[in-house]
Amino acid sequence: MGFIVGSIVVVGALAWQWNNFITHPIASSTAKQIIEIKPGSSANKVAHLLHKQALLNSPKLFSWYLRYLGKHTQLKAGEIEIDPQWSIDTLIDKLIEGQAVLYPVALIAGQTVQENLQMIHSLPKIKQELDISDIAGLQALLGIEGKIDSKYPYANVEGWLLPETYYYQSGDSDKQIVLRAYQSMKTKLDQAWSTRDKNLPVKTPYEALILASIVEKETGFAAERPKIAGVFIKRMKIGMRLQTDPTVIYGIGQSYDGNIRKRDLLKTTAYNTYKINGLPPTPIALPSKEAIDAVMHPEKTKALYFVAKGGGEHHFSNNLIEHNRAVNKYLLKR
Image (cartoon, rainbow, N blue to C red; front, side, top):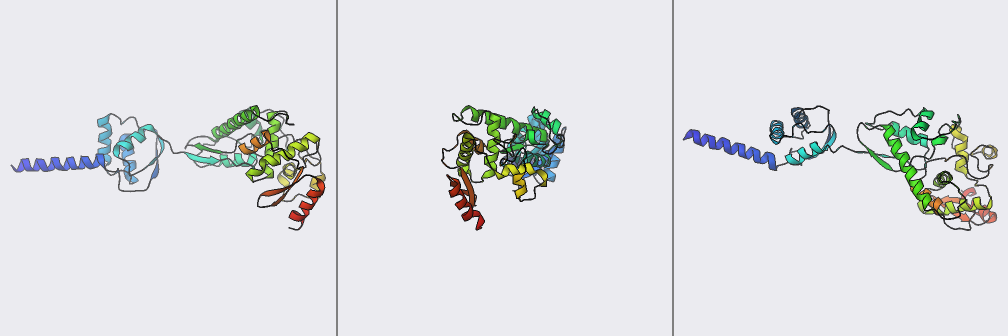
């Protein structure tokens, strides 16, 4: 009789433990954690890793259950974020699916391609395959031709990465992100070019990219971009020089110290749009989708000039007299 009672107690305890194992969260913790499962890890090794991180209460039962289900060889390697409030079956499904942890990387509109490449190259958990100082290799990777100018070494690849947020997982390479951003820019530019307004003075998608980079640098106020683009389009149509400071700054190069001096405006460079006609030879930064759309569909305006009035916005003028008044009001008095 005692044996029977003892057996019932044992069976009852096992049933209670099994019920808890199946129906309760995998651990008492509430904090999610990222773990990395190495390639070739056994079910036992994964179980002990989870237990060590307080993400699994019953590692032995977990290993046995995996083998019972025939899934002990199906666990994926890589990073995964574990929620200790998952059920045991949800945990197993997630480990088999191998839902990798994704990390965001935001390319910044208005920054140069070199600045964005350096940021990509230094990302955490990224495989560094790209030598960003190898300009010829970078051009070959993107399929971009052109002689490298020692003063502007990144000029041929300037503007060719679409600034938006991309996602990568541990072990992805910087080269993969650069290629994705380049393909995204090509796709965006081709789509925008195919629906552009008629009679634009930009004759190729690349010219549109150049102008979009200037629009991007001229205003951080998104609503103004179509009007800024409209001013530049109008200047180009009447043969007026673009006369935009951001191109002068790009032309100064690494020696730019935060100030544009009179000698900078008077010095002829490929990027000084106070001295050259039309567009500079390359973009001067990464243009956003909105800046590209603004160039393809510029606002029709009588304005030929604009001046910053603070808060990121500009005052627009139709003639030089009005513009000089605005300069006196918003810049000189400031």
